[in-house]
Image (tube, rainbow, N blue to C red):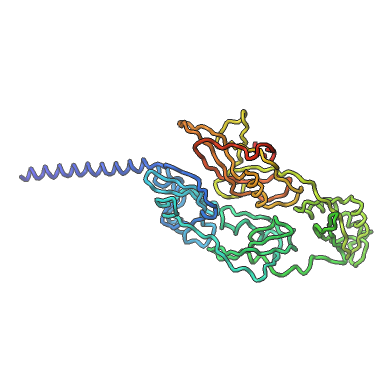
Amino acid sequence: MQKSLKNSLYLGLAVLSLGTVTVVSTTANAAAKTKVTSDVTLKTAAESRNVEATGTNALYSKPGTVKGAKLVASKTTMKKMANSKKSADYFRAYRVAKTTRGTVYYKMVSMDGKYRGYVYGGRSVKAFAGGIKKAATTKSATMPSNTTMYFKTPGKSNVSWTAPNNTQYKASKVVKDTTTYANDALVVTDAARKTREGSLYYYVTDAAHPEVNGWVYAKGLTTTKPTTDNFNDKTDVKVNLKNADGVVIKTAILSKLDANGGTTSTATGTAVGDSAKKQANDAWGKTVLTGTGYKYASADSSNVSALTNAKTGDTITLIVTKNEVVDTPITFYVTTNSSDLSQAATELKAYKEGTTTAASDTVVFPSVSATFSGTKDASFTAGDLVAYLTTSKLNVLDTPNYNKAGSSDKYYTEYTLVSALPGTYGTTTKAFYVASEKNGNSPMSAPVVSGTTGYYTNK
């Protein structure tokens, strides 16, 4: 009986051992066979995809359960970012992947671009879960009682931004130096605080120079109007640059002028025509008139006369003329997010029937009724360009159908406009799109049957 019991025990242990091996093998195989069933670009508004880590899951180069996934940021690092007081540690989600296990992973990039990868996001694409949650990177703030402001210290600090830095992915400077706009009145139209840092920003508009419009750190602004335009009536001459109708286009100062004969004047009413003509050359006029759409000619007889007769302390008038209307070429880019930086984007290719092989990046640029045009060197906003592209039905572009290896289905890629750059008419600008691959017949039809295709530069 003991022998029988002993044999039974041996047999039971053997079966148990075999069972254990089988279970481990099955689990390993399941992990090895986990695959991505879909991985698509998120199409919702960019700001609705601002997220923050919860600290419960690590960040991987691929969905974490897929073979070959490498650690990008550990769970410990993600927890630190979840508790961070820096906006740079927020993320922007831009793709979503599903696996054969029914799990969802979001691909995202930190606002400073340091970390990029996939994080577990639960089991539904309807809401962020698991390792990330939706984030409000800014919150509304109280508007100031006085909404007219000026740059406190004009220069390269506290300039205007497309969004408070790091509250949107790739937020960028609208202008890099505010010196030219030192005396411009800025109107505050919105106020917001960065959620993590608590710093206050105002959105300002500049009627004289719309290219300045953007978010400015509140402490970089002042309600005090500049008490002086640095004018010295003993050495300087004020200038009003007017068009033919007598409208003042810009004002400027000719400073530290020499008296006719040689030395810097130190008395009001001193004749300084020779020095004034030398300073107010064509290059000076081009700088002063930047963004206005007007040009200045120092050789114009009326300008020569005004400068020749200038005396310190005077206000003289110089005549400017409006530039011609010109076309503004556009270069089209594809981006994986809503960034307006071409460094984070790839230039699209123009599809030309008979010479181009259809592919996912060969876009059909249709004929439109008009190019993007305006007065040469006059400023336009990103909104102006977006409005043109939308009106011309260029806010959605498509490739022709193309084939994919191993499939008999028809495919085409659709590109949807997400952002554009401000600029000046006549100088090539940029528009940015996100891609979405689709099955079926490509639309490819032009929104206008006759017109021009001269609006794009893509080759």
